[in-house]
Image (cartoon, rainbow, N blue to C red):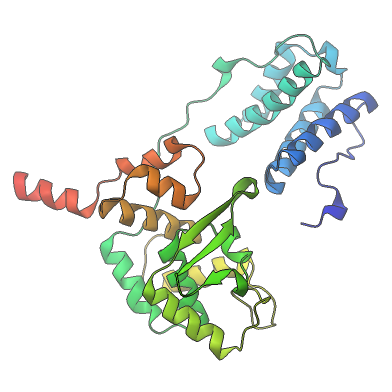
Length: 297
């Protein structure tokens, strides 16, 4: 999104002027901390919604006011959505407390909903094989794209922002800019490198070109990548919806099954918190299942 839209400023007409100024200070602090545009926009909308119901000055807000709003907003919502609402207002009020716009803590930890535990969705070995076979019939661009996602574990937004000049084909590596604008080094397989090189040669790509392009000669964006994978999933006969993050999860589970340790996987995926990566250790790999079957029958 273009910064000319000033996504880190609120223009909601229902806000008290002092509240708006404080909210905009908070939003700017998120921007300066390199928080994602989508995160800042979500938080801004949630906080604006809070002040649409609670129209009193900041310093007069109590825990009861927040709980009343949360109860109203939570009706019919999933626990993860409720947790997002609470995270947004909690973050804002913590900022207000630190900057002395408020004097009391108004959000209670006990309000946090219990989030249902879910494992990452990934392709098992049979689904993975079906997709790889189906990929043989794809255009050279789509085949290169699919192999790149499987081979690197990149986020879809990272892939969309890559350029040809970022690639080192000799060492089969490149630098990607992840969350928080952190740069990390990734690698890709020999098969991916050969197909990718073929794709770039066929289109006579220049170093400054986006790595993957659409038919109009522009960079292939996130939605375009999603559409490609959705179509591939349908052609491969997958029951579950096939999306870019599933490639990332499949990459991680494949690495774990082949003996990579969690810290290495975390570094490759760009996880700042190792606990995020630990969830992959809870997924039974094919080797584990085979061992169980051999022992238990």
